[in-house]
Length: 292
Image (cartoon, rainbow, N blue to C red; front, side, top):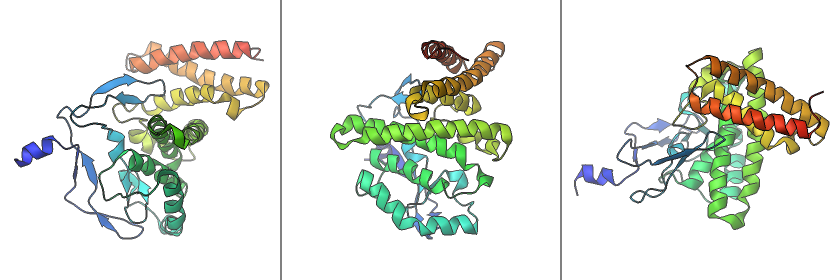
């Protein structure tokens, strides 16, 4: 079989240049996805801005998200490629000290992992759990908060898929926990966009939340509203607190919807979803007694 024919049957390849881990100095060849070749069959865009992909008869399950994060196979340090080598000494030491804890907790959830092997649903999920954990230990200069939000929601997508595949293992609990974390952190990201305590603009290119469309800050506003509605009972158990929470999110959503109607530059799909979500907000707030 020719090299071209062999590649046509594969989803990914290894980079020729070695990636060196800044934490433990491990060398590895990062796995990357081949482009084109009918590997991706795009499906519908979900309400949480996830692009679903149909199972491919030739290649099986294919997900671009599997290959986004750079993960050290030895110490399980994980980050977006842009942030891989930008650690200061304090961050490096903090992440190094947490190595055993990081490896232990992720393998308790997903079982034994091998990042030397081709990425799969388990290592894909792990890459975002590990990155979330590592970004907890990064300083404000790299804007870790919006990146944690993206890692949390992508992790929730993975555990949604894992729950469908292995319903007896309780992955739905982790899925919902990650969604709730995302709900809180997207709200915090909105605050940071206003107060400037983190350079959130520098994270614009990786806000996603998926890989096919980068909805950027519009996506942050929409997802904050979507997740606040979805998890209002967990975020604010009392009805009066829910009204306050929902009213704040609705006002931000209204500004996005209004700007979308007045600007042709705004992407149509997200503006249409904003309109539908805004109507749902009005109905829920009315059921709770209306805005005071």
